[in-house]
Image (tube, rainbow, N blue to C red; front, side, top):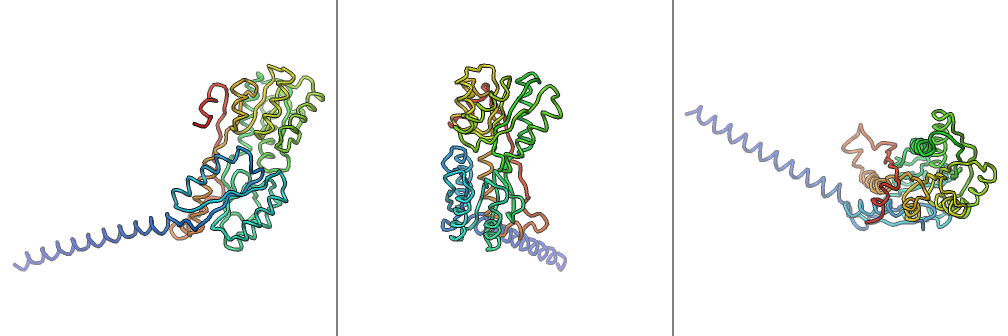
Length: 330
């Protein structure tokens, strides 16, 4: 009888322990969902850029907004209207003054915004960089393209289009880190892997169609036998395309960057040969996810030995006439 009673007591004890563990786990999971992965609508995160009116930012902002919807927080988009570093600094200072929950920044200069970025971090505002980094700043992470690798991909594509021979040029934004890296990746790859090709000119298009068109004209004056141009951003690519149309150079090769409508239309019509498409939606989406985790201290509490990574490569693909239709907004 005593043995039977002991068995009953043991079974009851195990049942009570099971119920306790189940309730504890359920409460823990609920707390994780409610307190950590869900914010509030008065919690505002801000995306800060330059040339804020261009199409390029739309997919990054869409990713930012999609993450905000998932996390139940608010977002704002602010930026310099011109390619002017002082205007971007002013915009960032205005954002910091409002003490947002976090800031995602794409900087047109790898150093000029550092004092403002550091000021925000020291004030307890989480900051991550996306698209264009400020590596010496106190920003927690950079989410964007491996731009050196993207430049190398453009070089391989250009070599394929030109049968591995010919003179080529680059139109870029030489003061912006991501464009420096794209240019360097392109130049290094041509120099190391394609001995019958030569980069004969690198010019500053300032992200402007008209100026990039002028730079292409100058390249043709300096090198009449120029066979191709790599443009490290979309506006310039369209500007170079206009020059090629004007000169009726049907065999000339242009490789551009990104997937704004003007670029896609020129690829579809055979004016631009290819473009390097970035993971811009991913930049925006994961920037907000990182900021949210930093704001709520999730990575510190749950992963003390695995903080958020300093760098996340969001990848690239090559857009050509064969696949261009899939890049138009659906």
